[in-house]
Amino acid sequence: MTYLRLNNLLSTFNFVMIFVGFVLVTSLFLPANTLNDSLVRSVTLPYRAAMLALAISVVLLNLRDRDKLQYPLSFFAFLLFWVILIIRILYDTSLREDILLGDTSLTWVYIVGICMPTILSLAVSYRVIDLEKAFWWILILTGLTFATITLKNNGLFTLDAAIQGRHQGNAAVSTISFGHFGATAVILALYALFNRYTTFLSKLMLVFIILVGFFFVVRAGSRGPIVALVFVFLFFNFGKIKNVFVAFVTLGLIILVLSFAVDSLFSAVGNISPLLEARLRVTIEGVGFGARDIYYSSAIDLFLESPVWGSQYLIVFDDGSSDYSHNMFLDALMANGIFGFLLLIYFLSIGLLKSNNLLKNKHSEAWLGLLLVQQVTFNMFSGAFYLNPMLSALLVIILLKHKASRNLVP
Image (cartoon, rainbow, N blue to C red):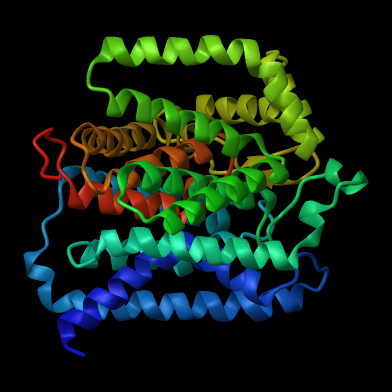
């Protein structure tokens, strides 16, 4: 195998595994649920080590062409945001004595062992990644993952008292991550169904992925993946339809129809997950965000303590526990103040602008923009920026591979 073919293969495989690798491997080798942490680590640690080795290999393969790489200002803003965030986390966890954050080793595993290798490997290999092959391989491996979960996790289909709770794909995948994995599958399969030429058998497989993916979204019991799907649809509606008036009229008609059908839709969701139905009804009725309200107000208070540079990256509660705010914009404000917030807004805006132009120009890689919207929504309601390598991966590819101009070549 020649150098170019090997580089293309490994770079593309590295990109694919960011999206589907962890859920696939853990679903293949772990049970649906277990209290044996050592069993979980016996699968997750070798997998992470293998992916780190793959990322390093991709970096080494592409170092010979590093002089040809060109990076836009938005990418440097992205890197600068990461640098000041790491400095803040390092300062809070190692140098400060006025706050106790508990064990932060997992945070550093994500930053040093997952996010940084992901960013570096994609930053040097983005030109040789075959995104068309990556798209189909992500879908194929997602279908394989769904089949594995369906065969091994019987609890997902139990129609008894167990239906009341939230479900995860396997012992290593949380409910929120499981829900977003299903949402990603729905987005990609729908995109393929309407934007790719497929055979009849392929269409049946795509419909299977859509139905099972949405079932998993609901069974996960988290509102975030549902909200993400809504945001992706809205982004697609305004991005795909070039006439803004038509886009608004279409949106209005859809909202009108849904307003009459919302109770029936919620009841249908309740048949699969009563918990999610209850949580959605509370959200629609405007009762509030529950525990999230406490996180949000605490994050704002920390920001106000030091508006320019931020005060700390985690909220410390009265019982001694600590957590992120579950909103990356508030996280940026409380950790790095206005400066970090403006950096975040800048490169996210560029990324979403480029994604919008990909849709308007019917570009073959517009699916990247849809996934970016999903991951941004994910981090607006759950998770943290430094714990989400998929968001960073999408930003690297979109910021580096595409221009903000509307004059894109499909």
